Amino acid sequence: MNGYFVLVLHTHLPYVNHPNHKLYLEERWYTEAVLECYIPLLLVFDRLREKKVPFKVTVSISPPLLEMFRNDVLNEKVKDYTRKLLELCDKELTKVNTQREKDLVSFYRERFLSCLSYLESVNGKLMEGFKKHAESGHIQLITCNATHGFLPLARYQPFAVNAQVALGVETFKQHFGFYPKGIWLAECGYYAGLDEILKKHGVEFFFVDSHAFWYADERPKYGVYRPIMTPSGVFAFARDPESSEQVWSASTGYPGDGRYREFYRDIGFDRDYEYIKLYIDPSGVRTNVGIKYHRITTKETPLERKEFYDREQALVAAHEHAVDFLNKKIAQISKLIDVFGQPPVIVAPFDTELFGHWWFEGPEFLENFFVEAAKHKIIKFVTPSELIEKFDTYQVITPADTSWGNGGYFDTWLNGKNDWIHLHLIEIRDRMKKLAENYSEERNPLKVRALNQMLRELLLAESSDWPFIMTTGTSVEYAVNRIKTHVKRFLDLESQLVRDNIDEEFLTRIEREDDIFPWVDYRIYAGSQPRKEG
Image 1 (cartoon, rainbow, N blue to C red):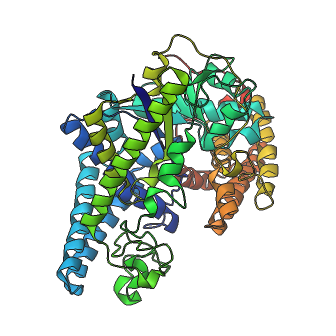
Image 2: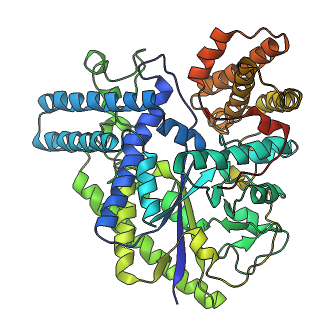
Image 3: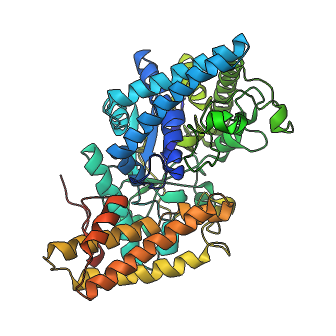
């Protein structure tokens, strides 16, 4: 008897677009993710497919990230910066002294070159790489709610939740040409009744953290190891805590092995300013450039005393850990079969950025995991849609309110550091709804543009990334500024609209900067229509 394994990669970044700058500081989030994570993973998928290694991955791509994938200006910035990194590698080859340093620089140079080649092969549109593997049946693509808004905190404004879900579904259709069957709810945020909205928009399944099953209205017979059906008929899959602990535990997880590359030691900080200034932020702020010469060594080792990174040893570690993870999954499956007498379903969801960005060797870990699993044939890799068809009966259960944040509840996104955000969001949502109803028959093109832009500003302000950043204390000033900017732009446009004095120059400027969802229609806030078929 086999066990089923559902690997889920949640792929998301907040929408960052600053067309008036060469490469804005926070746009580097996107650049780093593309070069260190998305392309390396797509290349792993390519290699597995070429070797005919069986693999199945469920990949959620958030609408903001899809919109950045289509942004030609942003993608040209990524290509230009990659060319600069190739130039930096050439400079490094003349600067370093030992052969092992030169070998590592050459490795980085080849890596950046392959990334640039991949970008050019898809014309910068990374969604084409994911779509190719979806068409071959190796990955199932699913969506996320529109701007990764944390839905449980909007539950008393269901029209706002409806808009987040509807636009998430429609954005996916705009980019891939078909509707998604599943959704990743931002931060795994769920509350009772949300499944009804998902059902209305054709969503067949979603994911929750373990707590949602542990504290459900009825105890699931198979715990987190079998999906359940919600009262509305939508399926819920729960995260396996063992898999999360084994891979991403801060104390015992694989990425902490001393052979792996040290994330926080980078030549963007190590080199003299005059030497490195062309490759960091134009403001002079030091940034990572992605060329790192050191390994973790030990967690206690100070950054300045980290030992040299040995790529071959790091790859050995990635293989060892893939085999260890596989053996643990086989043992877990065997134990669960003994308990349930049924094939268990192990759901292992991770942030995609873990593999390649935070854990540089993560893509190779996944590649080795699939290669080794093919030798044993005990684990059956499946997508959620395939799995739903495999069982005849399901328990009907209402999952508990939950998230995958600290403690499994909502306090990461609602606490003393960020609670002020929600007062603004509640207010402008109500204003947007009233305006959408009052102007539902509007035909004046300028007013329609203003109303659509107001909805974009509201949606961008709703991103769960901003309160998360405030909680964790990273890039707080940027997150605060983003919230205030979007709210102010909303209010300015509202004032101009009701006074019938729209500043078209101002509107055009912010349409260019906050250009997410160019096809959006503000009237979605006036009603709750399900998606159109087709």
